[in-house]
Length: 108
Length: 115
Image (cartoon, rainbow over all chains, first blue to last red; front, top):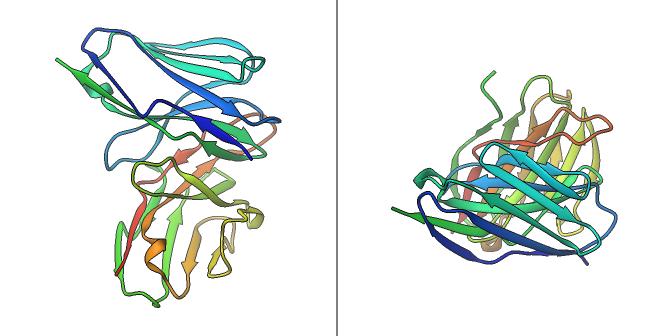
């Protein structure tokens, strides 16, 4: 089987930095993606790692280590609007296999 | 084009009834995906199309579920003889496709409630 595990909830204050981890038990995937989903909203794409290492997109960075079966999403300069659920997902053939999701709550 | 659209946004039905959902992808996208999401969980892959061809279907998908994309544009997902366990958000996504990774753009979803 294949599974992606994430912490269920993370809390932080505005302006802080938070890291959301994703550990997986799967192989043969193309890359690791991250999606954001606000309550009642659609998932929206944040970042993608095809290769090991760090990808930076504005306030968000994502990291992948295939040898450690591990990735993370780093959110900097947190804002209230970052309160949402975050999902890691592996690309297998053309479909996405999503993780369990992490609910981020940002406090003032 | 403002993105992926889905219709209806909400559907309440009684157990045993058939329901059909529609998805209109972004116009230049040739790949279309259906996912199902229950509360507190990540989206779960159901099936996907490249143009009008259905290329993969989840083993979790029972025979009561069928999807079509007859002209390679919009798609429909039909659930026959609905059960209470079918209650979920049904998400549609589309992507450009090709050999390299392309992000998927999700629609707002259809929330199904089976009574």
